[in-house]
Image (cartoon, rainbow, N blue to C red; front, side, top):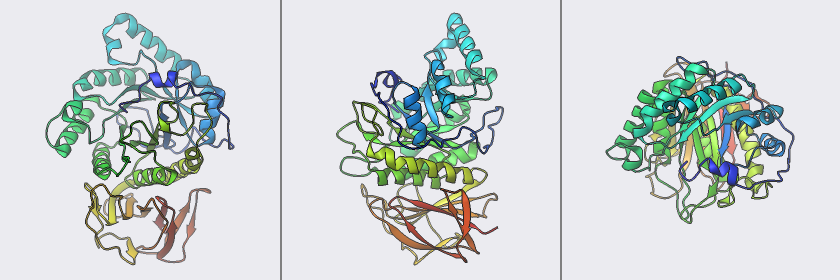
Length: 424
């Protein structure tokens, strides 16, 4: 996360949180695929955050009311998470590679693990953020150590984005070469259960040009390694060069992550007084973005859970094709009417067109498609034609509804999406 460090969790000063909507977040749910050699499973798709206030019952209630289901906790806060039916991401200064080199601290870590591993709220151990490749060997030892003592819970590490420098990544070459090598070394040396990374797309005067490149690289490595992935997206401004995204722009980040196969979403930041925007203010009251994400978070969980048993088979763009993205072709079993002609990419401009995320149980046979409006500035209407009769998923009810044939007429919110499937 770079600017986000654990001290923010204690130093943010956010307080007086007031719940605003009925709690509905669940800690249980459909099981994902267990990573090789571990007992950890994704379970309910992850909705979390970086940099929040000290955990209290009021804070936890606000987060659960807003659809967040993984909250940052110290060991003393696990009961708070449990009372509010939330999962806990445990942070503690003992959870670092150097602990293993000190017998006394290693004993303290062992005692911590024994104390928390059977707690019903525990979901994961936070280890570190944005490590360079030089740190991977030590991190691998710590991940293996935690896995040996508690295979049921995730050891969580977050990675750099593609625009990190070679010095930060600890690898060499152009952007793609250096980042591929960084991911390859991470997977080989650390052997994680989850791929997590952050990417901040919305500059003060323009959009970034590597967002879909980063998504496509993470998606491919996640598929090749059989791991789920999580995207940390922008929800504030921390420097004059970055703008505060509005609700439509953050919905766009969530929808596009889903279309590429994400099983987790995280927001930077929830609450940190030195940043502009965010999800809650310094006094703990929710911002306008909180209201938007209260709906977006629940939709993300519903759709990602529906896609969880499937495999991401492709993500194709109709219209503008950004760097790193793939263009729609006639081989795709789902098409748009009228078709969108391919347009040249315009650097620093918002992506345009429609994104189709393809999913299915068998390679080459997509049965589901997530249709994303890439215009975060306005609604769009389109018709999706499938290979046979289609159904549309209703996230609010978790049900599938027939559209009356092979054509689905869609009106998509700015940055919004709709999930369709071939009628069983």
